[in-house]
Amino acid sequence: MDVGRVKDDILFWAALLALPPAGLCAAAADLRGWTAVAALLGFYAAWFLGLVAVWVIAVFLLSLAVDLNKPVTEGHPVARWIVVTIIGLLCKAGRLRIHVTGWENVPAGRFLLVGNHRSNYDPIATVWALRRRGVDVAFITKPENMKIPLVRLIHWANFLVIDRQDARKAIETIHAAADYLKRDVVNVGVYPEGTRSKAVEMLPFHNAVFKIAKQAAVPILVAAIGGTERIHENAPWRGTDVTIDLCACIPAEEVAAGSTRDLGERVRQLLEQAAKG
Image (spheres, one colour):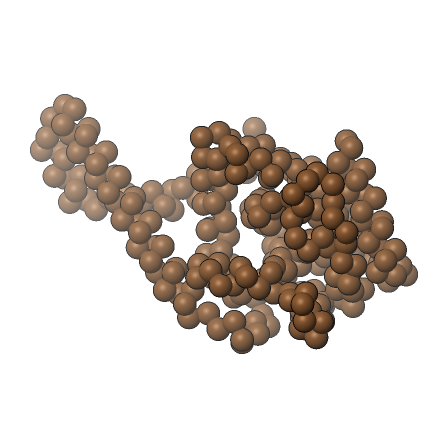
């Protein structure tokens, strides 16, 4: 048993299942038998749903204040905590069972995380899994995601938007991601396929994303993910096993020496090998 994981889950749900006011418990104390049990369960349910409703409304209103045109240059612990909490709820609601291997390949310093892309749940599962070891990752995402009110909060959590239709803006995003890594703000995650693959086979890579690692002079951590493509079929009635294999780390020296095309071919080979077993 992963004691750290169990403790983490207990603390996570304890924060949401705060005890109802003493007055409600005292009122139930005057009742007897199953009536008292039903009353207490009702109080707890109402308290829990009330807390969730207030929290969701507060976060929704907060997300409306996000200015997407204002660059975020530093880390915001509170914003990241809110985003990670939402991600955790999505993982619980989706009944994900995440299994991570290859922790020994995680470098000591900052890195560019590169993986295959099978589902919208890929970054969600990855952020939630890595946070158990204290590893923060901010992904590069598509502009459409920022149109969703609650999702907009990821802007404050150092997630970046890349517009592949505008070369100038795409380069600006690459520079911003490299700057995060150089200034030790957060690790950056990216999917070189650009969009999720509807099939098992990977799509062609956009090798320009490897410029992030080259500019920042950091290693590339390769992460092969599997199982997320089945979540939409299983949730919420059945759980889904998701595997994240941190299968290899390309040292910063090799990143500096190789071209973006060479790095793309190397990463693709590593991901294909991991998929085979």
